Length: 279
Image 1: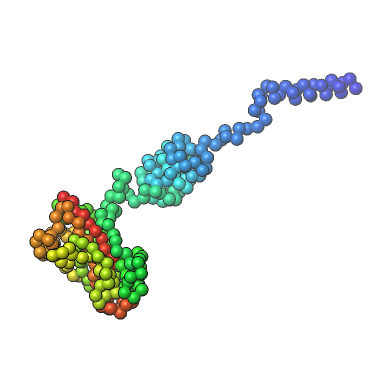
Image 2: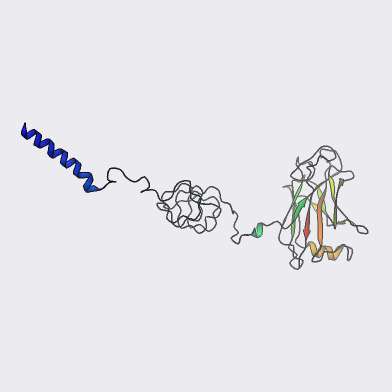
């Protein structure tokens, strides 16, 4: 009996002494000891992230070292156990970015602008006001034509008169037809005669609408004008009111033959764009 009591006291003494020797936190591991950056961190500038699910702002994963499986990888320094993963969405100057899904500043311009993808024109006169001749409105372009959509214009290049590299491209045109650009110094919004479209460009008093050279619509339903728009105006338009100079604002619209359009008229038209030319 005495031996049993001594054994019991010895076990109790050892049990009480172990926590005192190991310290107060020995019985539980810290919840944060193995987590450097949480999965929901959107701070962008994470130092060394462990296995971070979504680290920072993706946009361009600005010069990220080797980001692991980051859904939206931002400016992460060195992401912990990242390895080398491919399939990057659209990453800027990322070393080897992981599976970065969405990037904010896409394309390939690193200067903060839109680079060669910049549209220097200002679009207007979309068919979104229920005023197309036969209810053929299309808020994404001009009045709907034989292609089933409204034709719309985009621009590329610059507005420089010296460079003369502006290109105007029309999309969603009916194929197997022809058309030409109209240019004027002012705007309007009226039904175009014998057309399923609207007239969006107009001349100031004493001037006129000028026409550029006609051409065929491509098999893809597109038409391109330029470069050389400034040179054309100076070679073929009436001086000085029809010629383009630095500081001028001109408005462009595309007219085209559209025999099979929804209004069963002879022609159609696109939306319009404005361009302010620079030296």
